Amino acid sequence: MDAPVKESKAQRAERIKRERSPWEMLPDLLRYAREGFGSIPEDDLNLRFRWWGLYTQGDGKGAMGGAVPCFMVRIRIPNGLLVSHQLRTLAEQAGRHARGVADITVRQNFQLHWVRIEDIPDLLFDLFRVGLTTIGACGDVTRNLVGCPLAGVDHTEICDASPILLQANRMLAGNPEFCNLPRKYKIGITGCRRWCSYPEINDIGLTAIERPEGGEPEIGFSVRVGGGLSTHPHFGVRLPAVVRWTQALAVIKGISEIFRDSQVLRENREKARLKFLFLTHGWTPEKFLEELERRIGFDLDPDIPETPPQNTYRDHVGIHPQKQEGFCYAGFAILRGRITSEQMRVVADLADRYGDGTIRTTNMQNIVILNIPRTRIDGLAREAADAGLRLEGSPFWRGTIACTGAEFCKLAVVETKGFARWLVEELEERVPEFDTDLKLHITGCPNDCGQHWIAEIGLQGAKAKVDGQMVDAYDIFLGGGLGAQQRFARRVNVRVPVTDVPDTLARLLRAYLHQRSEGERLYEFCRRRSDAELRAVLLDRPEHAGTAEAGEHAGRAAGER
Image (cartoon, rainbow, N blue to C red; front, top):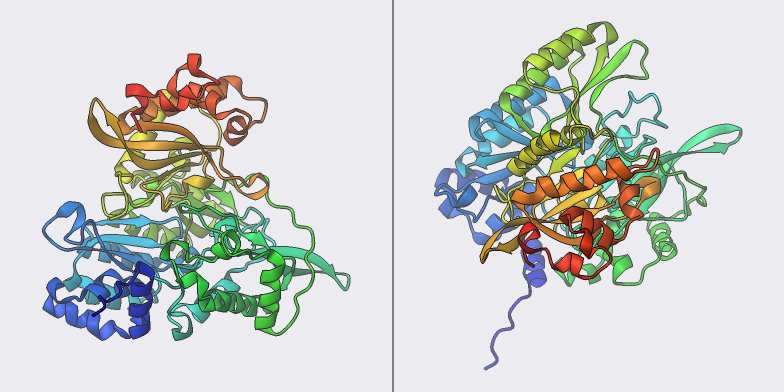
């Protein structure tokens, strides 16, 4: 008798998704809450729960191997759009179920940790009551749609694209037609000129574009498809077409159907993203457009030239004028995105007292209050400072982001949040004269939730051997950028134990300050130097510059591979 054929990882996941739609399991979630963690079947716990924004923490028995099983809960915030009473509800839930802390993510979401299964119904229904949800925040579905946090108030924007984004969110999130995609699916839609929602690294990236039509400027969109990071980074390819405003939803739906119906992408969970149509299966922009037009039933207009932004740095921190005369916005620098319940309440109160209650989150893990009369800014600034909320900060404080890390994530190999704060404080002490914007991204594993591939300095968690002992370490990546400077950061073959990271980066930053050309950004400084030259600076080993030994002979200072 033949032995049964063992399912592959992809086959098992596809079988589980076919058996039952995750959207139908709310009654089961309520039952599990009554019966306890032990009643949850493995297929629900490790897969279907994700469609409801739930991941087990650590080893599934609780964060850091604790005895109490806990969950990370991700709350979907399309375009980062919030109002004050919603933020107060998040603060209340964080205080009640998540030890008084929440994290803002690089996709404008909120995440809570330490949540028990018994607390899930209370959390979900309190969120539902104020128009928030966890549905589709994780899983093989359309993730949170990201857009410019200043949509509608940015005085340089081409258009406010948030209405299209919200319509796309309603079309895709929770829709049974799109509940079973090959893997996660990410969309960014922006009308700003700075592309702060990073359309280049989304599965779909729509960027507003103006063109003359009948003597009047018409607003449409360029469309990029197949962007993504992780272990196979790939910039989205621009399709040779312009999408009219009235065509945008049809185009988004058509692209989503192409992804959903692609059987070849379901054969391997590691290569199930839209980008692999280009990376592995030979698709071209022209082939994709042909298939898209077949799906939507009409031809798109030919593309026109587009000018990507020169400087992609935009943290939305500080007090700045809006396009509405007499009004400003105030952006708070939330280091590594970690914010307390009390701070959330303060932001909500400030938004009500000084503005109209409008709040936005950003993909730099910060938070913004809109629509503040200019005459009231001073009072807001004083109250914010008293609460420990920063409207300014050093380039390190403003430019550092960090993923969840090993504190809660099962995939991460190093802790990131505490490390990020410590690293910022150390760099502020070591290089106080640093005077330019900086994107310093920290991620705990190769999956790159911290987006190190697009950073000027990217740190990816790893392990290194020092004096015979394995210790936490980081691999260093340099020179990433987006927009007109689109390029992935280079791995320079330096792996540094955690304790040595501040000194290592300080050497690079001092070299940049002393040797830079006029107006030169750090990414440009790194790009015009070889890996060997950069290793020599990082490791303080000039005698090895230009030799292959520079990356391998790191010794105690950089650990051993």
